[in-house]
Length: 297
Image 1 (cartoon, rainbow, N blue to C red):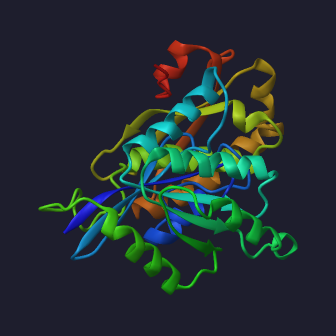
Image 2: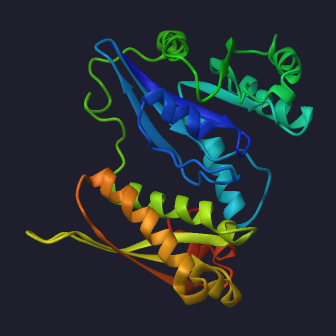
């Protein structure tokens, strides 16, 4: 048996979360078209009789030295450090050559084996960039293979990733996690991420990036529907009416879509209650960030 951790790194909105969900054939990481969707490392597990790969979806790599962005940067760099091997995800719509090179540099400097996955290869108008990205990667230290990815990827592509990575995982007497698990995250943790995903999808402009979701209570009682209470935390008083919407339409829409997905996750009906809470400039306050689980040392 071989078992270990494979960090999935890249720029924000490169397709890292879509790749992990595809590899483990379950929806663990939230996916939206907006950058900074992933805020904490998310684990997805692929197991067989011979190996267990724990994929770690890292936040998009940023360069920032304060607040939430600093946490995201540190979390991404920590995933690189803690992994046995890496998947570097570079999308065809990456804005500049320098941005792509930054990710490739991180992989080469890590002194770990890594695979380059060129994502969004179905973007025909950018297909000419594929050779340029390949050229940037070739010859860099630690590069094992270059592969393509799009959401209509065939199963053979997944197997090629697994076969490429397994030899670089440590030998292990037993799996790191139960073979039946596809993630070690609890239903409570996943529920919070589902609500945040719906906020990202439904709210416009900058609001989602200045929001956090906090679980206030998760109450399970015999013979009754589980009751879940969450706070949607915004950074300014002016954001609260935007999140609520006229007549409560926006928060109702967020709640309805999130509840449906949580019910699918739990395989039972639930009661989901959302409340908008203002915590002025929470993303720049160390104590507030720590309370929300965004710990910056």
